[in-house]
Length: 325
Image 1: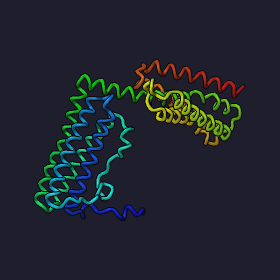
Image 2: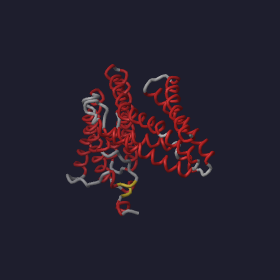
Image 3: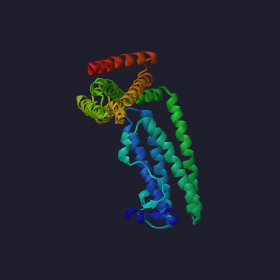
Image 4: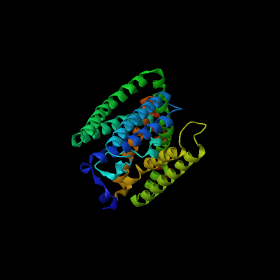
């Protein structure tokens, strides 16, 4: 077991002084997280940013109350005790990771943050010996428990407002531009474009192992090509399509998965069994493409099914004819 596990202090063994120190650092970190959220969403989502700034101010006020009590009870030197130093204490996402969270994810995250803080203060209240410390921790527990409800209420008000509705739509649009569109293009390319080489090889050789190798090469090669192309052809600044790295990963991974779906069945030695299963996988892939188009691109399911089945059938037929010719 790594050494840092041994160096962590058990939460139930903390003194009142150490609990206060831990609470001070925890409030500081939460305030920084809310401040980062407020700064990150200021331009695109001003109403939500304002809410995060208000929550940041509230956390700073809690920190001030804790500091005042600490100075009164102990001294000006605060033990350096943070979340990661205490075994069994709740954790937070690293600050650098918050930039990668969507607006909807962040909104859910703050409810969890307030719930974690409330549970900590309730528990700390039960084990505190000093009456003043016990009173403050109990008050903060009540306040934090209401924060989750207040945050939910604020979010519902924001979402029901015209500006909030625009923020939600903008966030959904960004998700589609950054993840769905590149991923869908990759899945379509991987599922459809690899049909011809894989099934041409299958019917030409009637050998599962050879078909598998061609399928792996076609799928992985197409994934690398699509991912690299998506990442370098548009930096997302002018188009507003988001991070090129995210789009590259979405396109590359989905392209590879689309091809592997009907390549991996050829792990089965029996050629005919593998081919039947591969064709079933093709149907699943085409249905998945049509479902994504319907859910996110607002295309009628019947139209989407016709498009992908028609296109996929042509490519599949070409592969079979070429391989069996």
